[in-house]
Length: 304
Image 1 (cartoon, rainbow, N blue to C red):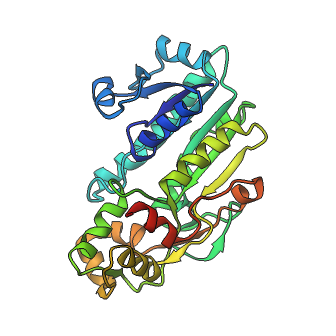
Image 2: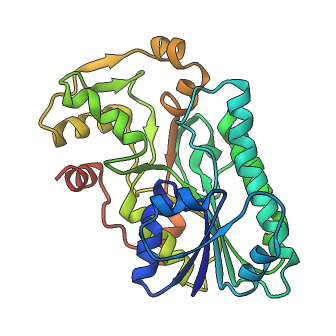
């Protein structure tokens, strides 16, 4: 298939492109900065500059594409959540979806499938009981962002194109993302859990994340919302204990919630102290097989 990928320079995109190429797919990267994208993506792909309004080049690319995968969105960990940064987080997701959806609607020949990134933040900050894709929207800034994000491409979803929503949890990758900051204290011998430690983390090994996206892309009978999370979410305390074990270090240190809130503000409440217990029910029912089902298996592989 010819696959257009937006947001290809992020953590997921950089692993997804070689995986798609290995399966024989042709890749076209939609990017705001072609030069920067070429430096970050070493694989042989076609690049199209895409900033705002749909160009003739973009529409032509869509008309010859079989699939579109949209991963675009500001990194939640990039900066402190000031009001201006929160606006960037929202706009970077919603505007990208709306503009891409508009370009798809203008194309005379439309792709067969559209995969749209989303997040388990949809379920809110107080999700302690296991919830599958049928779960209700929770409360909080991220829940509101995700709701707007998912509604921004209603036009595509209603057009008859096979539509897949990727509600991804915390992606574990050893050199990038949330895990890089979390592992450093353990290397220094002062690792431990954050907050009370009873909050759930819906995690996924980056290889399973990539394999799941490719699986959903290639299986024509699958559509709708999918939780991209490992089948065994863990508490923050269990997560920290396993991370320490993978580095032969104890998990004894504890940073209390009030301190985290004082230093990080709303970001701490929404991303560190929040509890998300999301289960990949639809993926499992469809026959997808996870390579890393437990947190111990994931860390053993990531830090082998």
